[in-house]
Image (tube, rainbow, N blue to C red; front, side, top):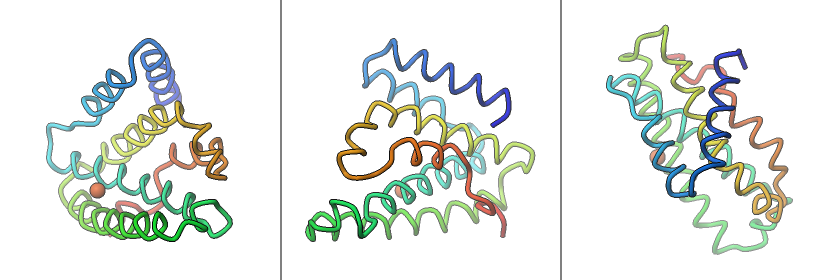
Length: 148
Ligand SMILES: [Fe+2]
């Protein structure tokens, strides 16, 4: 994480601490909106890939959800759906977005999501997920996300 992103996370933490949860969500979605379609798709690919990471962690066979077949089936269905969104949006983003901005938009999106979810670390821990590990993972854009 470079200095710019560290300041961004600090800004999120500061603002999220001051706001209601609904206010923090509004801020997050406002911040990830992009005026340029390629960068909006980069933001979507980044967010949906983060959702896939969350669902992978929750669906790990060693976790509580694996012992709840109905919930696990629903989460797997959502996971497959989000993976489709990632496949579509990452390709379009790679073709349309300015290369110099694509990774910073993706990283800001994932850091913002991690900031929102930081309020729910205890809930993730109840599901057997190491919240600190997951938030660290969410803060990084997967290698090759925008490589065609
Ligand atoms: Fe999606």
